[in-house]
Amino acid sequence: MQLTQQLHFPGELDEPCDQLTNLVERHAGRLLQEEYWSDDHLNASSDHTGQSYTYIRDDDIDCFEDTDEYLYSRFKRCIYHRVTHVLDAHTDEYEAFHFVCNTVKQRKIRRIGWRRLRTQLFEEDSPYIAWGVLEAVVEKLNRYYDRHGRFPAEYTELVETPEPNGTLPYAPDKGDYHIHNVSVEKGELVFTMNAPDSHSPESHYDWTEHIVRFPIHERFQAMVDRGEVKAPTLHTSSHGYTLDVPVDIPNQSVEMEDGRVLAVDLGVKKQATAVPVQHGHEDCGHEQTAPPSFIDHSSKDKLFRVKANAEGVNDRLAELRRQGKDHTEQFDHLLSEYRRTRRRERRLRHRVQHDVANELVRLAIHHGCEEIVFESLGQLENDSRGRTAWSISTWARGDLLDLVEYKAGLVGLGVETVNPWGTSRYCPRCGERGRTVKAPDDHTECRSGGHFHCSECGYECDRDVVGAVNVGRKHLDECKMEGANPAAYTATGNHASFPSYLTEKCDRSAGVQSATDTQQEQDVASGRQTHLSQYCSSSLTTKRREADSGGLHQNHGSNTREQLPSGSITQYVLARTTECS
Image (cartoon, rainbow, N blue to C red; front, top):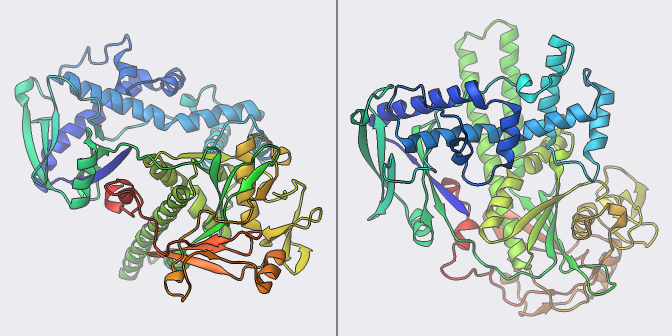
């Protein structure tokens, strides 16, 4: 697994970087335009194995036969790599295009067409397609239909040839004629770059070597000590030119239980509800091995406020435009404030997603899970109206799942998704269909309620906990929700405990905390949430719900946080490392 450090070039190297990126942009655009922007290549590149540049290098076509410029063979491989990256970036839309064309009639897609697409998308054998990608493809198809009165025969007829930027991936640069070199020496990263002196170099004498020294911090040095520095990528950024330097870190081994997964339900009031579930013993269905954990970020409400402020400023900008005052100083001032607020919103969202992803990976390690399982919420329709839909979009459709997959891979954990249909509608104990009610003491059915009640077996619980357990059941059985085996709580006793921050402040002796007093027994029966132990990690709060533990005893054992193995890179993975990720 790779961690990446960004380094910013000094301004005096802008000119040689310009020469390099100009060559990449020009030749990558030419190769796409002349040969590789076709459905055949899109399909073939998605099935290609091995390094990206070999897909084009092994082709029978000599892509540089008519080129008079002098280009190193290693530099040509970098261009091949860039072209293949462009093809790979369109793979999702390419698959969505064929899914739409094979599902609906070739006419403008309206209500009936959307209903057909939604129904087909939730079939068990349907390919995974993110709803946002599907929306983008349908919008393009409708525009094309308005102009031509038909659907295009191929995806590349729908989408014009992309114009790639000058991003230069050095990854395939190996051999005698290096066009770059990277080394770490005495607290500095030394980067050697071979760049042309003009936009059209005629010989190798027109290429000049430039040496740049970047100071590095302790965390990056620790990554280098434990891993291997790989070939970087040069690209433009808000800082000018930036070098992304990846470090290949060996996967860390953690103790796992076979067949145990951390099932996660993403929500609004709570960013995530996580429950460890595993295969049961013979004829016992499945088991929930520990009480649920609720992850709630303290910056969530702040993020909502910042978003509301940005929308308010945007409304004022719209009013000034209607009044014809978009050339005034007041408009410029508000526009600057709007951009500043949006940047703050992005930073907050990025921070929340990183913290939640870190905590989910930490919980999976703590409970000995081999996989983290989510609902595939990317396939749900995104109604952008309202706070709730926007919140789900923030936690579930953003980078959260990608971040969890990335961080989990560093410690050898897998990440899977399941179709979300039915996960909040079926009882995890008896498997019968239940209903969402207003409250534990009010069983009036309410579609937006936060409590679940099963009239067949009397089971009731927090709706998010039910969703999480059912996600685990559905994944373990690999079947539809109504066919999944039930999940029972494990027998009372010592379980993998969640270190409690509060226990350090409470005058309690270490050991097993009993949950059998009269009040708590009543709470278990009613599903009320009255006893929460908390773990505070910077701005992240994780709550354990004793009320829904079904009589589980919570073993606090040691009142210290989980200690990761000494010298393990895991401690760097689970820290919020914005500058390294």
